Length: 437
Image 1 (spheres, rainbow, N blue to C red):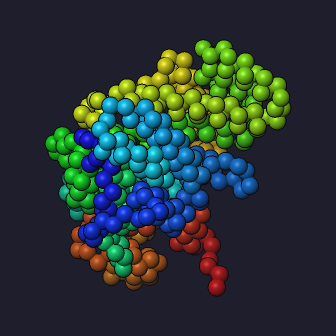
Image 2: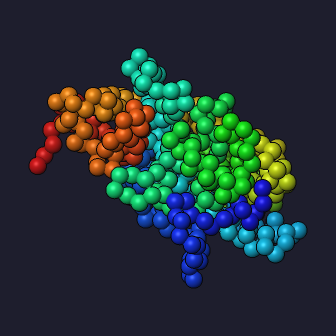
Image 3: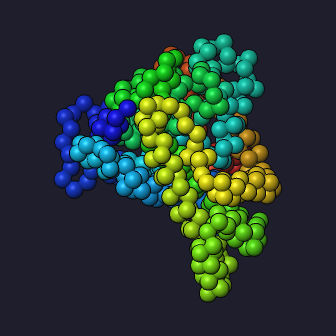
């Protein structure tokens, strides 16, 4: 793989001759198209980890994505400064776009996630597993794997590239380079592995993106990652692990002492830094501000080490040799500090009662919505189902004879919902609430 092809500005679904903008790069166009989109705005009402708690300052999917984008840009800037030596003039020019590509890809990385956090994905998978007798005989093996292994990662590619009814081809018409950078798992649901990156419905779109960026093919629809996907993954890993701890502190799940210790652990082998931290914490006495200060220190520390790891392994990455996550290539002190954070998050944060409650609610709500709308889509002549299908926005009204495409159109509708809208629609369908005129 080479940097010139990997940073191609060519847009998916746009056959027009490329004409550069005089004041915005092609990848800044990507960023702007994403941030002004309705799909991105809806992330403000989608759970990150904690139930959306009114005026409490904890993260939702939108604020998480903005922060990941910021960290991704910092990673990209550091990588460019470390990579420039040894490249020819054309390659040096190409890599200057890395920060913008990564920043835009980070904005988009969670756009395919359904409501109610990761439990939303699990609820979709479980619905089809539980109703195997209803659906299995209607689908081929690949289609069945797409549903029973449903992935927000694959749905992001679908959301960004598909042509909805009444819309133009190419979806958001984003650059191939940016789209390739969100593909953490560049293989289909039929491949081995815990996760996957594209549905059967996007197989041709994926192949086009991989071809334009010259990603390395490994057979059976599997490819080596676009190098910048490692940076997008690292930005996401850094943010969710660090920010979940800060949110837990704001909600009173973790004490200030516990939280400061978790962040201070990154610097135990840097005595000068520990002295500076002690001096600052002596001056700053507000607990939230103390945590904010050390959180920023920890993120900066991790960004530096992840950028170093990327550059150190760049030859293998460009050769398509699979690598561990960059956050798994840290110095021992940082590795141990991150492991402590992960263990704390699992034991005290992710199993916190309110988190578990919203996960259970997500299963119930999403399961009921899928049961109602999938049944209506598969049996559209039933009197009640005709009325149910009128609730589908026009862009999701699938006229295809394909059972798979009709089910996927329902998943497009449900996965795009906000938490509040999914709950509201569930209550209406169950007759718990009635609409007001």
